[in-house]
Length: 241
Image (cartoon, helix red, strand yellow):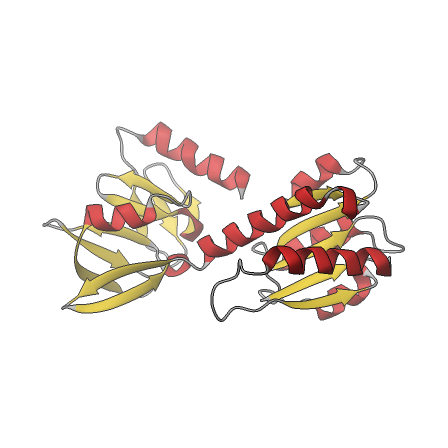
C-alpha cells in the first residue's frame, strides 16, 4: 500500500510519516505493508503520480509554485478513488477542500492535532476496505468471489436464487437474493432501483425516464412506484461522490 506525503517542510513531512506509521501499526491486514513516498513539491509528486498508485495522499496546502489545492484538483481529475488528506496552518481553504472530497483537513502543528490526522487516516482505511470488498456466492457448488467494483447489478429471475451480472457475463448462483442483499446493503453504492434488483450506482452511465443506462450499454428498469425516491437517491450519491 503506497502512501504519498507532499510537503516542502521536511520536518513536517517527517512528523506526518512518523505519526501515520505509529497509527497504522497493527491496523493493516496480514500481508499488507505501508510504503511511504515523500515529495518536497507538488510538481515532483505529480510527475510520479499514476492512477491507483496511492492509497491516499497527505498534501500540504501552502507550497511554492503549485499549491496543494491545485495539485488536489489534478489528482481528482486522474484518479477519483485516491483519498486526500490536507495539511495546513490555516482554515482559509476549508470549504475548497470539499470540492475535491477531502478525507481530512489537519491543522499544523501536527503534534497538537494528532487526533485529527488519525481520524483522517482511519477514514481512508475504511474507504479502502469498501473498495476492495468482495461478494461471495456459489454456482454449481463452486465458491465464486466477485469484487464489489466489478458487480453491475444483482437480480432474481423466476425463482428465489440470485443472478450476479458483471460487465460481460452473468452468474447464476445458489444463493438467495436476500443472502446477497445482506452482504451488499451496508455499502451506499448499491441501490434497489426495482423489485429484487440491486444496482451498483458506480456502473451507471446515464439516468433516463424509466431506466438506468449502464456502462456496458445494458439498461435496467426503475420502479414506477418508487421512481422519485430512486432518482433522488442516485442524485444524492452523485453529489457525495
